[in-house]
View 1: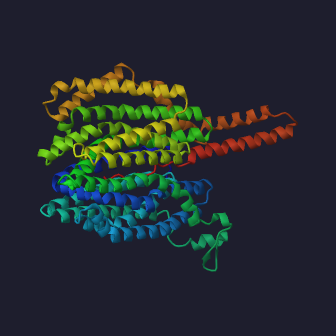
View 2 (view 1 turned 135 degrees about the vertical axis):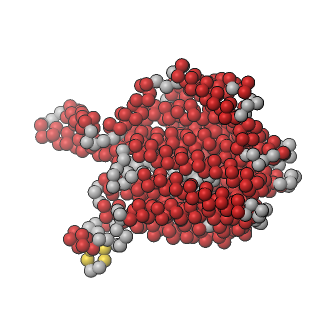
View 3 (view 1 turned 135 degrees about the horizontal axis):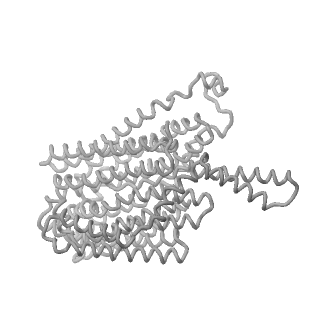
Length: 584
């Protein structure tokens, strides 16, 4: 199986993730037109519990399993690598089966708590997806651990394609019956996960021996005796406890947002429903309409976040923490460059964007949607930046701090929601304001954890101000065309923004070159720079100690071994973003 380098692998999985997320985001637009406000609200209600169960059963698998497999592959222990996959499939298939059963059995209780009886059938249609996603995550983690990112990217695109095709077909077939249309649309999600699982199984079929072990080779190596597979030492046996130790921290970190989504669905429908009719439709406009629009820039910036993780991780592993912080600042700069003009465009032209994408939403619902989009426009910048900084913190080995920051921010959000949603003059806009405050708090906390140098913090503020002024200028330049088609407005604004970036030098050549090149060279053990780094480390070890020649030779040998191990870790470590599951 061909390995990909750090940057190449990150770009492959990023491009696949971007394509899948953009497909999923745009899928919501025709789906909303077919299901209507109430149907989209019921559709949205099922996702928080689904995402929470996926967090428990599947979210930590890709990153945790990838790290375990990469260590086994680096040690040349192919049998242990395959053993990790088999152990993970058995372990997480059981956990996923429990999650599917829990979702199926909790369907009446959740629909009653949310005040929407039609949601029960939707929960049951989506329940088998928990088991299927667990299996899919095991395959993806194993491939990523072997530095082969292509199956992950292709499976994500296949998953979205099947969901979109079948989902729109079912929604059109049962357009007159909203509960049935929603249930079958969510059944399409389950079928898409089944398609991805089958695809990854066949991808792995040529590389994994699905029996316990290859008996012939293991008998020759002494690892098979009496029909029972044995290992030469206890450390060679993949243990379920080891997998759980790796995956549980990532699972806890990723479970915060789905849990917040469940509470959102209950609070909005219950509190707003106390004084307004159609609370389910209002929740659908918030979670399935406005949130879909503001998450489009976030989907694009996901690729930037994923591509920045390997660079930050390798520098931090090598002890070059100042350079790792500068990489973090550069990743934040790229994120702001993309997200700020998108947020400015959504803020100034919400009616044009909503009218173009959600043509079936009219009247009072359209007015609410426009207000929600404008209120949540800043969320595009905040969530994109939080996503990038959390990824960089993961690369630095500080994922717990990112999780703690998000936990505190979500607590702030829930408190604000419980207060604002009670006010009839605010209504569902209270959820939009609380969401913006949530990500603002998370952004400041992540900035404090990831960028500690005062000069770098001042530089981050300067970048934000610079791109904010450029974004304001580009959307203002297109304002005379506000009565024209939204695509014409977008084209003018984008042209002005890009021209401004080129004329005023938003990026310098020296910023762009090291991001891909230096990291690429240092991450290869066999590269010239890698060998020179090892030799320089050995020479420094010799110069740093005085004594007889034999002692200096031993010191150089130890120094060379440590430097080689550091480079191997930097070149082999697989840093995968926790897959925070937003409804797609």
